Every structure is written in C-alpha cells, then in structure tokens.
Length: 613
Ligand SMILES: *[C@@H]1O[C@H](CO)[C@@H](O)[C@H](O)[C@H]1NC(C)=O
Ligand SMILES: *[C@@H]1O[C@H](CO)[C@@H](O)[C@H](O)[C@H]1NC(C)=O
Ligand SMILES: *[C@@H]1O[C@H](CO)[C@@H](O)[C@H](O)[C@H]1NC(C)=O
Ligand SMILES: *[C@@H]1O[C@H](CO)[C@@H](O)[C@H](O)[C@H]1NC(C)=O
Ligand SMILES: *[C@@H]1O[C@H](CO)[C@@H](O)[C@H](O)[C@H]1NC(C)=O
Ligand SMILES: *[C@@H]1O[C@H](CO)[C@@H](O)[C@H](O)[C@H]1NC(C)=O
Ligand SMILES: CC(=O)N[C@H]1CO[C@H](CO)[C@@H](O)[C@@H]1O
Image (cartoon, rainbow, N blue to C red; front, top):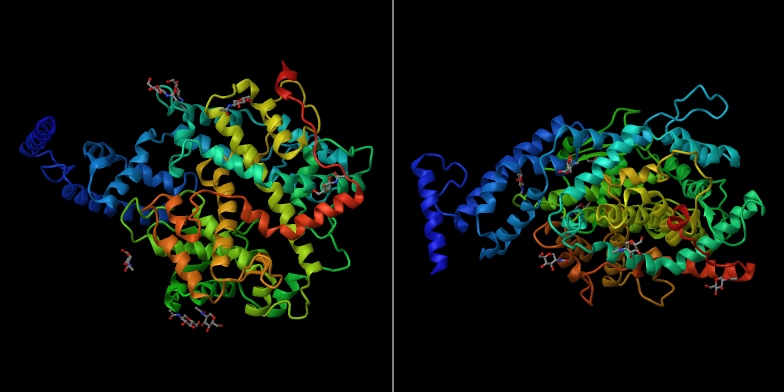
C-alpha cells in the first residue's frame, strides 16, 4: 500500500513538472528503468562530448576523472530521485552506483584546483639554496637534488640537501596539504571515517587493512634485504656511520632507491663477475626507432590474439612528441577518455621499451572498455590498468622474451647467476618503493580518519618508517620546521598519483602475471625450466582471452569479481605471495648471504610520538 502511495506521489510530481514544461531532467513522466535508460543515454552523450573536449583543452591540473565527475554533476540530483537500488537490470543499477559516487564530493572550486596544483608541482619547484653558494636558491628536488642523491658520495652534502628541502618547505605547500586534509575530513557525516570516500572506488572502507596484510607477507623478505643494504652501506660509508644493527638513515635509503638501476652504485650485485648486458647498446645495434617501440608493443597484443591495430589507426592515434618535450622522464601522454591518443617519447632506451608496452596496454584497455555506456566505461578501480600493464611488462622483461621474441641479447648466455643479478636490481627497486608508498598511504589515511592529530603527523610518519622500513630520521631539523615526508607523499594524496594506485597496481600486477603464467603452463612450481621470473606470455591466445575479459569488463563489476575467474581458487583479494614467488631465488640468495656474513636481521623501534611530548 505504502509503495503504491509513493509511486502515485512521484507520478504526480512528474506530471506537475510536465504540465509546467519543466521536466527536462527525467525526460519521461515516470522514474522507471526505461526512463533511467534514456537518461543514461543522454549522460553518455554529454560524457563523450566532454571527453573529446578534454583531449583538446586539458590544462593538466585536475585529472580527467575529476573533470568528468564535474561534467556529470548536473545529473546527480535527477539520478538520485530514482529508486535505482531496486532496479531489475543489474548493469543499469551498477551504472547508477558508479556514477553517483561523484555526488559525495563538493563541486570543485579554485581553492581545490590551486591546492592540487601546488601539491603536484612541488617536486619541481625551486626553493633550496646551494650548499656552496647560499645566496643561490634555485634548486628543486626533481632533478637537481635527486641528481645529487643519485651521484654524490659526500655524506654531508646529501644530508644538507635532505634537511634544507624540508626546512624551507614553502608555506603555501603546507597550506595546500592542510586544505586537502580538511577536504577529505569534511566529506564525512556523523561517525563515518573518511577512508570510506578515499576507498570508494575500491568499494571497501577498510581497504587499508588488506594493504597492511600485504606488507606483512613481504615483511620477512624485506627484512633480509634491509640487513643486506645496511651491510653494503657500511662497506661504502664506514662502520662509524652505519651501525651493524638498527635503523638505516632516511637520506641513505633514498640514495639506494635512486641507485637501484645505476651501474656504479652502493649496491653490489650478487655475482659481480657476471656482467649484466648493456641493453642500450643492444637496442642501438637493433636500430629501433621510437615508433618501432610502439609497433613492437602493439604486436605483442596482436600475438596474444587482440585485434591488430590497423596501420591507419596507428598513424592517426600515436603521435611522436617533439624532441625535448617529454621532460626528463620522457613519459608518454595518453588520452584514454573517449577518443584515444598517445603521444610517445621520441627516444629509444630499455626502460622506454618496457614502459611503451605498459602504455599500449592502457590503450588496449581503453579500446576494450570505452564503448561501454557511461560509468561502466571506467577503470575497474584506480591502478587496475597499471596492474594489467605491469603483468605485460614482467613478461616482456624476461630474458626469454628479449632473446626469442625481440632478437636482443643474442650473445648472452642468460644463466642463473646473471638472472640473480637482474632480479637483485629489480628486487631492490620494488622492495624499497612499495613500502614507501604504503607508509605514505597509511599516514594519509590515519590523518584523514582523525586517528592522529595534525600535531602528530611528523612523529607518526617516523613511527611508520621505523615499523615498515627500518628507516630513521637522519638529522634533527631546525626549530619551527614542519614535515619530513618526501615529495612523493604529497603527490600521493592527489588522485592521479595516489599511493593506493601504486601499491594496488604493483601487487595485482604480479598476481595477474602469476595466475596467467600458471594457467598457460609457462610457470610450473618446482620445474627449473618453467620459472615464474622467465615466463613469457607472448604468442599465447589464452593469455589474450584472459586479459581481454578483464579489460572489457570496465567498471561493470567490482574489481574483485573481475579477477575472480583468473585463479582456480577464485581469489577475490590481493595477495603478496605472487610477489614473493617471483623473487624466490633472490630471496634465498639474500638469506644465505646474510647467514654466511653473520649479519643481524631486523631492528628495534622507539616511539617517536611519546618522546616528542
Ligand atoms: C571544511 O569544513 C569547515 C567547516 O565547515 C570549513 O570551514 C572549511 O572551509 C572546509 N574545508 C574544506 C577544504 O572543504
Ligand atoms: C554510527 O552511528 C549509527 C547511528 O548513530 C550507529 O547505528 C552505528 O553503529 C555507528 N557506527 C559506528 C561504526 O560506530
Ligand atoms: C595480427 O597480425 C599478425 C601478424 O603480425 C598475425 O599473425 C595475426 O593473425 C593477426 N591477428 C588477427 C586477429 O588478424
Ligand atoms: C610494424 O612492424 C611490422 C614488422 O616489422 C611492419 O610490417 C609494419 O608495417 C609495422 N607497422 C607500422 C604501422 O608501421
Ligand atoms: C566505439 O565508439 C566509437 C565512437 O562512438 C565508434 O566510432 C566505434 O565504432 C565503436 N566501436 C565499437 C566496437 O563499437
Ligand atoms: C590509531 O593510531 C594509534 C596510534 O598511532 C594506533 O595504535 C591505532 O591502532 C590506530 N587505530 C587504527 C584504527 O588504525
Ligand atoms: C645472522 C642472521 O641473522 N642471519 C640471518 C640471515 O638470513 C637467514 C635466513 O632468513 C636467517 O635465518 C639468519 O638469521
């Protein structure tokens, strides 16, 4: 009875609208599924028009996700009038659910835009004075200070820049950070926690707990690596500087991170006599052009059964950037909302070869999902696309792929020793970056959930660095100084670069890779000829099928449902075990090496927050 009354009232209301000629929003006089479908059609048109405009007029401050959210704002009120939670059509229901996430956010104003710009740009902003010429204050973290961290072995110099960058943190950056805190804290009503909004696209308020579980899984491996790094730093800088037990000072850990791919670095390859190949000269010898990297990447997808990109498509949608326009990282610029375009780096080097495979993976993802109706055409969750790209990159970086598919490294006998060296470098990089992102993520979520006060941000940061990384504060800052987090923390709270995306993408990438490798039998546990770290996916149509299923699902299902068919056990959560399995050989080598050198593993932590009071 009540239901009918409600229906009557809504019909009456709609009729009144109609009579007054104002019913432009629902376009029909009922709020039924048919009219909902029509509404979606209209929103879809708006979406495509805006997406195309975005490609032409993007100013790069706000992410396309946020801009599209703003574009659809005018429809939220109308959409909320529908009883969408009780729709019969599951896809239509899902579409409402996904789009209406945007309704929780206040309209974007210039303050939000300004804060975003400040946080995104801080790594390139110049405020640090030269150590030798204190009146010259034009050094930015990227790339001046980073270059010093990477190349200097003068401890005073590294320490000076570590401290100065933090001591002189501009006030407007701090204000932007505080603005962001308020913004997320303000989203909540009553007793909600802000992580409900931070993790809305993961559809899990307590997603952090799942991420924390991953840290525990990789913990033992991390601690072995930590003991090893403490040892190599002792060799490099002396026993007086680095104690045999305890925390590694932050500035030196940052140096190790930046040096993970450097030839002459503090790192010591497990088998120094077995020289890693010079991939640059290999690529030079092969005579690849920048476009060849795109073509090679596109052919990877062709080989696993994706529809081949036509010559016309490639010439129209892949555009080489002007020399020098890509910045020092030479990152591709990809427009994957609506119409697709990729502006690629005009250089050829190994890292680019890998990244281009990731980029073309993004393009394939866009091709697979962009034709779904608005809302469903989104990434399954932030970082899902990164994970798919990561799985492809892991395949392309195998000695097997480089040799057999790309005809590189012809003169190398890629034996176990050489492979251990390769995995060592990769492991240092991954094992140091993942926990860093996690510490940033946890700090941020603890802040917005009001689990810690603003006054405790800094000490809490050091508590987390101790707990998860065995890293300590190198020097006490001057009085009145502010926060000690590196620039990646601030970038990591901006949606485009958010730390969640990196952690999620990394772990899920290894997870997808392992699942697919097991599925096609290229990885067999216990078979020394079918190891996970040398599993190549190229040429296998089953791989294409599995990847395409995930890509073409878009956002029509939660990410957990999308990964479910991958595994026999129907996993719907993240796991760190694929990561551990991938690095199994280097993990064993580290443990044995620690043992033979009698190194202590682990550290003790002290509570930096109670000490400060
Ligand atoms: C958060 O809410 C407070 C109180 O309503 C308001 O003064 C402040 O401007 C809001 N901040 C942001 C960033 O939305
Ligand atoms: C939040 O408040 C509501 C109503 O006041 C209550 O029912 C609910 O249990 C509370 N939730 C938590 C997590 O405290
Ligand atoms: C794509 O092109 C490759 C050759 O580059 C060919 O072997 C393959 O069959 C093509 N795939 C389709 C679906 O046409
Ligand atoms: C990509 O490479 C293949 C093989 O070298 C070549 O046949 C094809 O024309 C290239 N595609 C484009 C778009 O240049
Ligand atoms: C996808 O949408 C675009 C633009 O509306 C259209 O040109 C293209 O034919 C569609 N492709 C498919 C496979 O439906
Ligand atoms: C909140 O922070 C305190 C102290 O940092 C910690 O002990 C506690 O576990 C945290 N609670 C949650 C829910 O994260
Ligand atoms: C001395 C020391 O702590 N060595 C460790 C090195 O790694 C092995 C394997 O995990 C540990 O058992 C040793 O304790």
